[in-house]
Image (tube, rainbow, N blue to C red; front, side):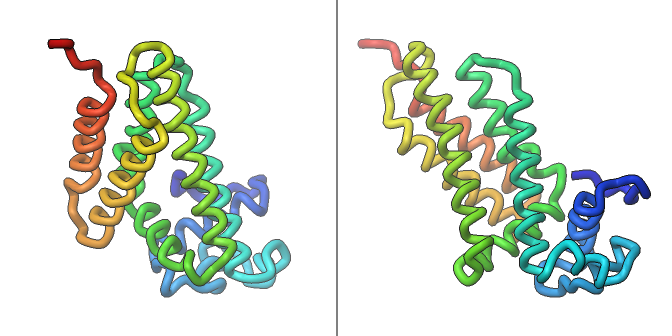
Length: 201
């Protein structure tokens, strides 16, 4: 998501979502208000309430937008080679996340609200299930093609997601600049140890 000025001909929902991103980046989830979003939008809070009844409704739409962008990025990957596709997917989850650290912070803040906010929880659960499905599918494709060694693809996908979640949390909570690159290296090492064929003795 780019932090560009809203255009006068931009769809109002898109403009509000981008204003929400800018407000989240500047103030964080705890201090986010409709007034601050409206300031970024350049219009009144009433103009936002015309499209979204509550702040939570708007933030749920924001999550849908961010998750949709991730799905578009994944679908844009043209290679069908399982090894390369797995590498690119892990890059999207870890390396590319470093391109928008403020978004990473905002998403972690919103994720912390998931136990208390059902719309947030549903979206994070759906996204987690979708990413695990992508990982599991490409791993199974690699196993079927003889590219990867036989393994429990579901378990491997869950471990990779645990690495991703841990690296992202450390990057935000502990402000560790190397957390994402360390997570990416750990994911690569785990993939190599688990999925690479071993020479027979």
